Image: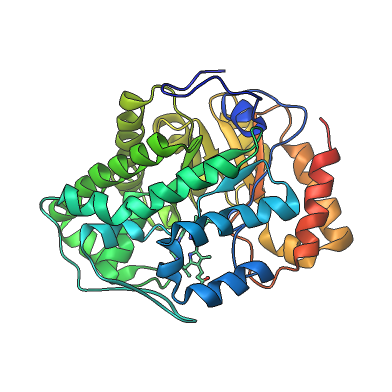
Length: 351
Ligand code: 1CP
């Protein structure tokens, strides 16, 4: 396995990193998107104490605790930093509020010509402090995943001010002002590279780039605003930390997943539940590791359905380097016992 610059020898092998480096591991590493969240009573309790969601993200004590909660219960192979993708526009100077029960609301859009790096770094310091704290409490065989939103997904929220699943206003803006939109994407490439490199310096073992709305872009815009900016971020990371493991998650990319796997420069591609795992393993499982892709409603359902669906998915991975995850985040009504059931299946499975 590639050794990371600036890190001491790993005392124990981390299963997640073995898979990310292209190994066909016998035991399958797993973690779940939104594994820290409202389906856990201990999260809800802390969330009440913290007050607002942003307060929780920017309080290193709370954020570190919430990051570790799911591992205590279920022993996932990786913790994911507790934060949100929208802290980047916030650190760039756009106002941000999480409206209870409605989701994020950003202030008026501004195409920041230049980044005030001092202000940007200062606003994000609590995130780096959270990473250092988690690192200290995390067992040697567990990985810590840092993350950021991909430029396209972040730009969607910045332009439109809130999510609606379609982002027609953001797309209309991008298609009618492509040069201006390129500039925004360029700013986000710079900011996101800097943010992820700081997360790595603070101690994460891998990073994931969430492109939740990648599937909304047709060709050739998918290449222009999804693949190329991601590639530039990965290249920037690799200039500072050669071969550092990066997971790319271009959600609902469908037929464009293959192009992404071949050209985005990432070491692992996350697939959603609508893309067949078998096809991913066959068509790009020799180039990148694959992460995914259980339908989150199977986890909500539990019982025999969950058991048989998980086992059938595991078979479909074949010999590809594989990280088990959901196709999207844990649904907040999911009973924690179902996650325990899933963890037990994965802990005992061998291929
Ligand atoms: O009150 C609450 O508890 C708020 C719910 C919540 C949580 C738990 C939000 C608001 N964000 C988060 C945490 C979060 N968000 C994590 C933490 C780590 C983990 O996975 O456990 C991560 C990685 C994210 C990433 C994120 N935020 C994405 C990408 C992944 C995805 O879900 O597609 C996106 C799109 C967001 C924006 C966001 N933040 C929160 C909400 C409700 C949304 C979606 C808004 C929308 O489009 O309507």
